[in-house]
Amino acid sequence: MADTNVWRIKDGIGVTASAASMHGWEAPRALVMPAGTTVALTPGAWLLDLGQGDWQGRPLYRLAGGQVVTLDKHLSPVVAEIVEDGQVVSAMRAFQPLGEMVREALGLEMELVDHRLHPFQLIKCPLCGGTEFVSLDLASAWCRRCNAQFSVQHTAGDPGFTVHCTWDDVSLTATHYLLPRHTGLSLVMTLKDSGDPLDLWPDEGCCHGCLEDHVAQTGPEHVLREGLHLCQVGTLYGWTLVGQANQASQAGRSDTLFVDDHLWPDPERQKSAEVLRGMVYNDHRTLPPLAALAEGEQYLLTDWQARGNPQRPLLHPLWTVVRQVEGEGVEPSFRTARADLCPSCGLPVTRAQFRALGETSDGYPHNRQCVEWWSELGWRPGEARRQRKAQTA
Image (cartoon, rainbow, N blue to C red):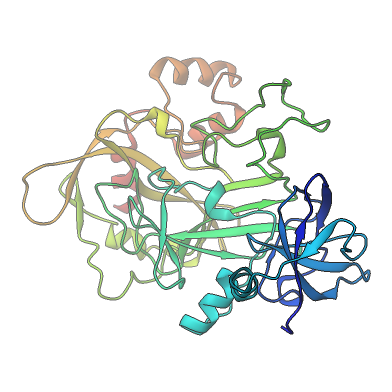
């Protein structure tokens, strides 16, 4: 960047600037703000002339915080004065945004999937509910609590992002969900066409009963983290289990877990024709709710139910609730605590609900689809283990 002037807004004068309508690589050594953002420049504010304009020809300036803004016309001695202090000028010109520092230090190019939405400010870990994430040399991100791994990619052309979660090295004691470590299996979540969920100010587009001094916010059971502006959340596809259940586990990993004194995942079940041919997909349904777990309980993906085309069936997860057994050898061991989770929606089914819904098929929280699954599988609360043995016999 050629040497250009640093300006200081004069006392008693206010100037309004706008976020530049351009990409980060068009304004080097600057932070590009979301489109539509306005900034009130108060007296004393410093601006570095970037010596270039945006695509409309409006002049570009960089603030002391690194943000790039545009003005309707160039600054003039009427509203600002040129700063002569050499230290101020050197500091303003020396600013480097994170992307440039990463490029120089690590040889990596940083690319934001969506300038308006930052995934790790919005998501929570689907396996443990954690909201603190760490990165190793910006190569990937992990949940600080349970060590689940995350990667982010573009959607299929819509503004937003898609997040993939895998659990190769997840902590068995920190996670709420015990899932097989197959190389082709992952959890996927997509958020697109969204506003800024971090903006907690109501506007005319609010649709969840926001008041002037309070906005509707996401709660503990929402797919995203708690405390976000609910009206600003766009199209959201909650954590969906996708992939294949017949691929080998991660190399070098031991998956030796025992549930009720049997090896999990069942090696014979993984060799069955329907599992070998099937694809995992659970219709954008979220994982079973954490609110249904008691202290010390965890969800275990016990088995797969194949539905649809027998040559290419869709595999849906079947869950049970387990507790870890303490002091039983080196390898982890678990015992079934409850086998009452609906094979369709994953919510608990009481025996009273099962009897009533078997007659009316129109109850709450379970519906007609749930009842159809119960009939198709011959399922009833508390008998999941018996049926699983029958399937693999």
